[in-house]
Length: 137
Image (cartoon, rainbow, N blue to C red):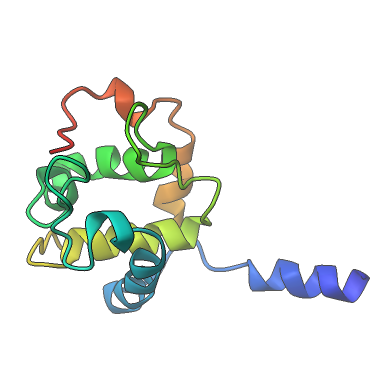
């Protein structure tokens, strides 16, 4: 049991900084396809009227909206089908999927999110619902 616990702990340990965009985007694509694509579609175009497009969405491509994007992924969106992923995915997975979403489908923000950024955002006790300027088209 002790050995299994040690192996599990080492499997979840990862550097909090220093991740490059290519590696994050590669892992983020897998996280997206596994958890997000059923609603937002593999193309990032969403389903009009049901699930917002991430492709071309200001929240997913403009640097000024990075925190809003992180808070939406971490906390979900009250009153919508968007779940809170902050307890379901680890900080590396969230950093990877947000990096992917911000740089896929022509979004090309250039933003590279680190697990440390996710940890900082988790400490913000605000839900995306409290950000009325976040447009969920």
